[in-house]
Image (cartoon, rainbow, N blue to C red):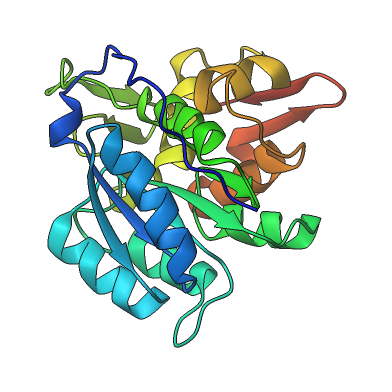
Length: 242
């Protein structure tokens, strides 16, 4: 059951004005599009909707949203496949993607993070709670204050403006969370970052993610950057080594 939230709009301090923030909602249930779309529009965001994954991908390429709320089970193209396409589309690498789905099984959450999702929300969810989650996700939007910040760690060059990695001369485009995790670990090579610190710094302490989230992202980084660079400290966390 879903509820309309008609309470007062609370002003938030975002790096950009709400009216400039674009949110794409992709779901094959018309009621979800209408109710959640209404609540997000009432908050002042630009909201676009699509009824399946293929339509969502096309609209994402056209509108370049800051946040995509994506259902998993949809016709034509499911959410997992749509997320993978989005993550490999130029201009959408930094878009925040969260899944909104009735499927709460652990394997589907892992599949979502494998595809490059930033978060996972299980429905049904009260629109008021969803709006709070959206606000928490959007706090990750940062002002472009480090436009020419380029960091070199060993043979790895990290371009923070373009979310681009060059490893041994090879350019690699990483999904947002993988990039932020790599940036954190390489900020202090050989330092062990505790799991709770990683969750707080990369995912934010207001966003609840599964316990396997870090492990999935570390595995993806090992595949792309190199197995030997990422060391597991059992029961503590991870560190980056040169």
